[in-house]
Each structure stands twice: as C-alpha cells, then as structure tokens.
Length: 89
Image (cartoon, rainbow, N blue to C red):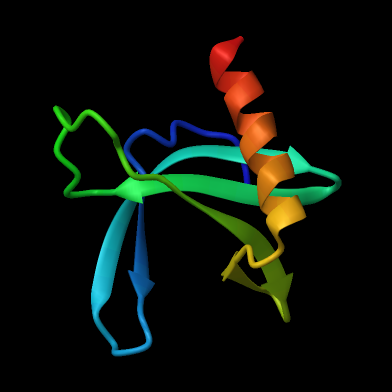
C-alpha cells in the first residue's frame, strides 16, 4: 500500500453475514516485513473517551489485497507496541 493522506480513506469490510461496515484508516505500519492497517469504525463518536481501533494484516494473493485478522497474540502485541511508539513520538 502506498503512503498517502489516509485520514479521508475508508475501508469497506463485509462480515460473514454479508453486512457492510466502514472503517477510517488511521495508519499503515510495517513490522517484521509485514504490512498492517490500523483503522476505526467510521461512525465512532469523536467524543468517546475510549475509542475503538482494529488492526489487520495486509496480505496479497494473486494480485488482490486482503485484510486478515491477527490471531496470534505475540504478533498482535508486537504490532500494537510499534503503533504506540509511533503515536507517542
């Protein structure tokens, strides 16, 4: 994925039941030669004290891009730590 102004980019994700959900891209990170996207629900209230964010691994196969859930706790911790450091700097 190319670096660009991601504040206005939206992802459309479809769940197992076929429902569409929209997410605003917050950031794209590279950790251990893998790319990850950090995103938040588009309809999230700006005034919420605890905002919800999701992290997905970006995978490419046959020229198509897929977002995969991170199921490994160590992988998730490493990505979350990298993102926290980036935000705090």
